[in-house]
Image (cartoon, rainbow, N blue to C red; front, side, top):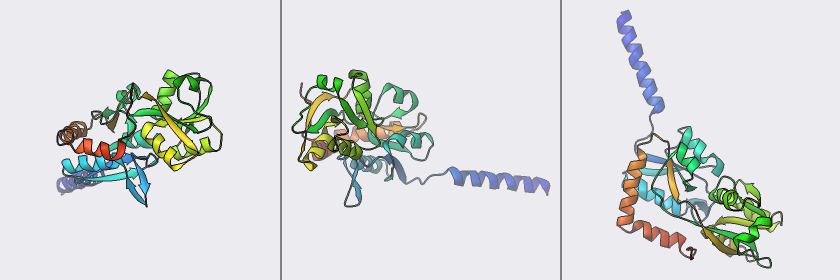
Length: 247
C-alpha cells in the first residue's frame, strides 16, 4: 500500500510540475514596449507597427499565434530573463553587453539615428551635441550611441519616447535623439519641430531570446523565408521608407 501511495504521489507531483511549467503550444509571447511608432504603438486602441506585424508573420511561419505583453522598454529583457515571455521584439539593438546575456535572431533592420529640435534651433550635425542637453530613451540604442560617440553630451534618459518629446517641447532639454523613422513621425505630429538624420546605428535590431532557447534557430529560418518571399521587404516599405542613411 505504501509503495502504491508513493508511486501515486510521484505521479501527482510530476503532473503538477508539468502543469505549472507548460505554456500554450500554439502561441508565441513577445515582450514589446508600445511607445515607439512606427515599430510598436497603439492606434485606436489597437497594437500595431512594423515589429508587431513582423512578429505576427514569424509566428505564422512557425504555426503559432503571436501574443504581446506591453511593458516599459527598460523591463523587456528582465521579462525575458524571468521566463514570462518567449521573446522580446522592440527595436532591440544587438550590443555586446546584450549578446553576452541573451541570444538574438539575425538582424532584421539597421536603423538611422536622428535629432529632433525646434525649427528655429536646428541641430543637424553630430558635433553640435557635444555641448547640449540631449534627451533619449532609457537603455535604447540612442543612449548607448551617445555614451560611445558623444561622451561630453549631457544625457537625459526617459522611460518612453512620448516623454522625450514632451521634455523637448517644454524646453527642459536642447534636443531629442531617436530612431530616424520615429523622428520623422514625431516631427509630422508636431509642426513646431523638425528632424535631421545624423548617423547610422552601430548595430542592427534583433529579436531577443533566453540564451538556451531553441526559438532562435526557428525564428532565423522564418526570417530567411520572409526575406526570400519578399514579405519582409514589403513590410519595410509599408512602415519604414523615407529615412534611409545616405553617406
